Image (cartoon, rainbow, N blue to C red; front, side, top):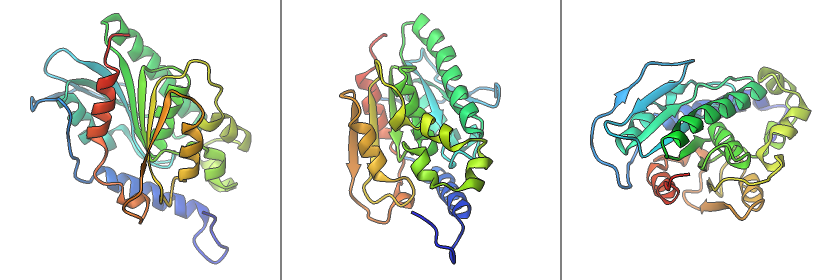
Amino acid sequence: MRAKSRGLPRLTLLAVAAVVAIAAVAGVLRSGGDGDSASTRVGPRAQGDLTCRPTGRPRATLLLFHPGGFATGTARDFSKECQLFARHGYLAVSVDYSHTLARGVRDAESRARKLAAAAHHHQRPVFAYGISAGGTFAATLAARDEVDAAFAFAGVYDIAKWADGNKAFIRSIGATPAQLVRLSPVNLPLRRPAPLLIVHNQHDIVAPYDAAFRMARRSGRFALHTLRRPVNGYAAHIPHPIAPALAFFKLHRRAP
C-alpha cells in the first residue's frame, strides 16, 4: 500500500499500523487447548525479557515476539499472552528484541539458542510465537531451524516489499535496502526448516497476504491457514489465536 503525496507519509502509516497492532494485543484473549487454570509466576526481567513460569514442570519452552512494525513495543506488550501460555504449562519468554532490524534478528536467534539448549537438556521442545513484526521473527527461527516449531500470525515475510522503499523508515530501524532483502523470511536459505504454521487474513491491509502465501510455498514443512472474514483487514485480527497455537504446538511437543 503506497502512500500518495497528498496523504499520510509512509512512516506515519507504519506508525499507525504499530499502534493498531499494540492495541489489538490489549484486546480480549480467548484461550483454548489442554491447559488448566493454575496461577503462574511472572519472573523478573532479564535483558528486558519477560518470563512467565508454569506452576508445574514445563511442557515446553515458548518464545513470544510482540508486534510493533519493527520500530515500537516491548516484551511487556505480551504480558497477557505470556501469562496465558504459562497457565497452559509453557515456560513462556516474551523477548524484548532490538528495534534495529539486524540486531533484533540476532536477539531472536540468541534467545532461541540459549533457551533451546536448556529446554533440550531437560528433554522438552522450544517453540516460537509471533504476531505481525513478531511473526516475522517466529518465521525466521523456523526457517533457520532454531526452534522445534513456530506459529506466525499476520507476519511480514517480505520486509523489503513491505517497507516500500521508504528511506526514513528504513533508517529508523537501522537497516539498508540490501539488509531488508537479506533478512526477509521469504529470501532466507532453507536447509532443514522447522514446522511453521502461518495464519493470515486474506484481506490484511497492513501485512500483505501475498507474502504469507509465498512463504508457505517455500517448504513442505510450512502451512498456511487463510482467514477470509472479516474483510476489514488487520485491525480485525481479534481475538488473538491462542487456541490454534496451542493445538499446533501440542502436535510437536514430543521430546526433541
